[in-house]
Image (cartoon, rainbow, N blue to C red; front, top):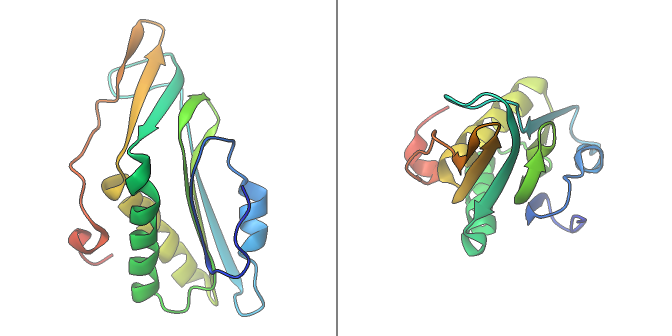
Length: 158
């Protein structure tokens, strides 16, 4: 997975491991003095479930990238100074510790970069048609923290 260097947003739904270092480096541009990287990883527990060993992410693939593009557009509307933005979600089976979602934002100043990155990950959690099936010592089942899907504009100000 490589970004289109003619674009300012790197949007993807990926089956392969997420390129955290490459994405962070890609966001470094001369006009931006701040780069914030958020990496969501698979943890060893979930609501009411201890000893989680893996999570399988499934997605409505045809909608993931368009919705990520909507999130990017909403972030750029709120923070017009964003230089580059990376929004990538992984699908497939991931072990504890593997990266499942990646957000990288570059802006001229740190406050905007932190705010933009937080807005993006919070919006992704509400707007993406991605579901997780957890495997733990006692069995397997769909994640219990599902929320209704909303668009970026429906989340209100950050």
